[in-house]
Image (cartoon, rainbow, N blue to C red; front, top):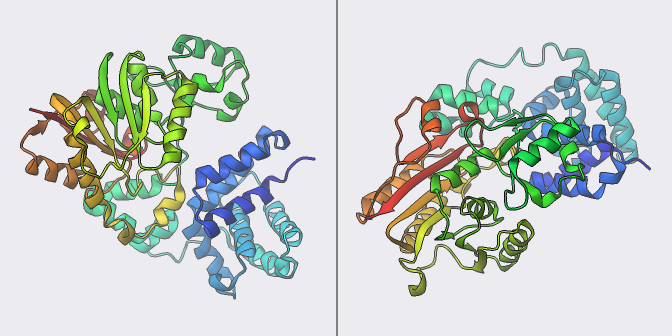
Length: 447
């Protein structure tokens, strides 16, 4: 029996909002569980509804509150998600007829134990439908208006404006709702990039090859690729361009000894192993034993035999046996994640004050990891966030307090050219400029 894509979307949204689940993990779990009962079209509909409601929550809640006699906090969670999903279809999905969006929402209410709320849901959605050409006419042309239109919290826009200027902040807010590219990297330990391209072309799967990253592709129909039996899953993996650029910047080479101090889930270590032609040694650390096991298993499946995973708290003092023993050390530290909002839209609703202590932890990890670098070796710091307190300020403090390190120019000339800047030891990648996740890198060399 075919699964109901709309019902699954509501159930997944409830798990994110009620249980604080990670959006990607929740959706992946649903798609894998119902893969055989959902057509490609229904998978696409489920993903669109799910991510659309998460991305546009502030906008949807504003519209619903303007048309509801009941305050949002008093509406049952299931009914509220149904209202959000119906509202999203009315405003942002032109190909779905308005009557169908309303009918399906009411039908689901009755089948999901909200029969008493079905009339209320019907009335609110029909009111929105009648007024949908003028829903935002009353919004002021200020920060609040921008926040509602882009569904980006005011305090986050203010943070971005302070860090990167008002124009970039506006573009980041608007772009936070854009669909990110489905970027994959060919596992060159298992398949050549040329063979990968031939199989895509044979199956009619459209792709775009990255202009200056080898083995990196943006795939137009990722669901078709997942179902393509001719390409085993360990022959490619999902990795945003920013993470691949991070590995390119580190520049690991065959026979070197590399440390990845916050390695889970292991993607950067696997990419580094390919760049090293699977020759040398990569120590991948994580604080959690189950993540250590996950890294080891993933490396085994990918054929990256030079990766060895172990448990270690990256912020703890550096053990004597690890000091000055690595050619390159990567510190891709825990962060607020404000650069990954297109993939994890729930992050943008995170209170700014909740990440205030992160720079202290990040600095501790960077300082401890610096002791692992041999003289002449490379230390690289990175985050997937857009927040100078976690990025430039940490790197500048490190250079100031560690005279044994000097800036190392990042080998990413094309990325600097895109922001009209001269090559430097640090760079911020922006979604609206580089078509990557928001990402920061800084590189140092031990004198």
